[in-house]
Length: 235
Image (cartoon, rainbow, N blue to C red; front, side, top):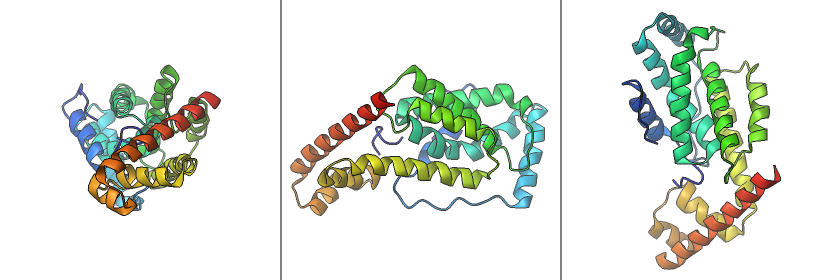
């Protein structure tokens, strides 16, 4: 997966933070891949999560670590990576998000939907701060993310519904960018970057040599960067 569209290693202030980040990286799907359907939490799972939240607010770091290990992958793949589009920024954002959660968890109030919507708001705020600090080739402009954040404050959907919304939005943005490319360029990126096929397989499907495919992919990604840069300057 290219860092341009999607993709971590972080120095953790707590023992379980690195493991959470690594698991998030392992489970992050391609944007256009047929990802599994997010499952809504059962009542007993919500009850268990509420108990973990109570323990975490009482100072139980193990309980808080369990919550972040559970939801870190979802934050990583659905919230941070699509909006930041860079491995380095996504690493930084997830680390900052987790630190903020540790600092502010005593403020969390249970609303019956689990802890994920609250975590998502913190992650969106973190992503917005990073986008404002450094504009680059992006799928999402800071102004768009600011509007999302306003809506997220009162969003009462479940974690599963929020994840599906975020991933669908990211897939839509990628598709829009690819549609702006010549079809052959879009096909090269889809095969190699999004579907993660080998160079040899992608070249065979496009009926070119591997060397020719490498040149084609380079030109395709250069064109995509220009499109993303134009999107950023126009916002």
